[in-house]
Image (cartoon, rainbow, N blue to C red; front, side, top):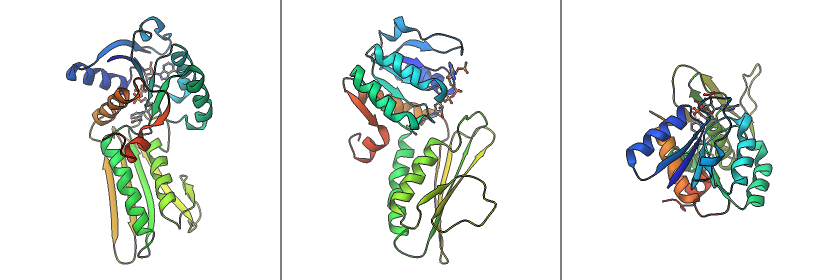
Amino acid sequence: MKIALIGYGKMGQELEQLIKQDKKHEVVSINYKNKDDLLDVKNIRRADVAIDFTSAEIILDSIKKIASLGIPMVVGTTGWYEKITDVEKIVKKNKIGLIYAKNFSLGANIFFQIVGFASRLLGKYGNYDVAGFEMHHIGKKDSPSGTAKKLASIIMENFPKKKKLETQRLDRQIREDELHFASLRAGRYFGYHEVLFDSLADEVKLVHSAHTRRGFAEGALLAAEYIRGKKGIYSFEELFGKGVIR
Ligand SMILES: NC(=O)c1ccc[n+]([C@@H]2O[C@H](COP(=O)([O-])OP(=O)(O)OC[C@H]3O[C@@H](n4cnc5c(N)ncnc54)[C@H](OP(=O)(O)O)[C@@H]3O)[C@@H](O)[C@H]2O)c1
């Protein structure tokens, strides 16, 4: 498969390394080596799929331009999900396929299933409380992480007591129906997410901790293979949850 990399930061470079090593695919275009670069339209046209890891500031514009070339997209960039209706319209109008994920790591997607399962049971039996915590490197631009938001929505879908997400520092006591999910930015952490359930009897703590960015790159490549030849918008996490990718 011929791949256009949109964004050549930490994730773009990780993907380039992975693609070089596994030799199944080829990078035909690298974009935004410098922030002021224009999209390399000529070479993006040669690609089977474009994989975007850039920033929420420019994602809508990139999707518009790449969709107009008829190239399917994998979108790893986070922090743009309030624009999903606009993205759906662009995808439909240009008849392309687009797959996105708050977290492309396979381990994290299995973690989502585990957290859903645990929330369902621990929300029903025993008198548990639940909370979340995430930690990322100092270069991360959005907070809370897309993965934290995804985890919070999974918890609230399954844990009846929690109805409202609270991600800010509290200067008051937490209300019973609030789910508190805290964020910390420090050092070089690739992505640490923790969900804890606490009761008078015991504590259940679930942790997903990325050692490197490799897992995100592997998942994004798997998504690229999946989206090739398809039309419409897909969420990687949903596909994974439904067992479409297995
Ligand atoms: N879904 C997942 O599994 C997953 C995993 C990891 C990261 N992410 C997300 O992917 C995105 C990128 O992460 P990263 O760690 O690779 O970030 P990064 O190292 O900051 O790289 C971002 C890339 O996009 C370019 N860029 C940013 N803003 C731009 C602008 N306004 N105009 C042109 N180019 C611009 C940067 O260019 P410069 O270097 O010149 O600034 C760089 O090439 C983030 O949204 C992050 O949250 C998602």
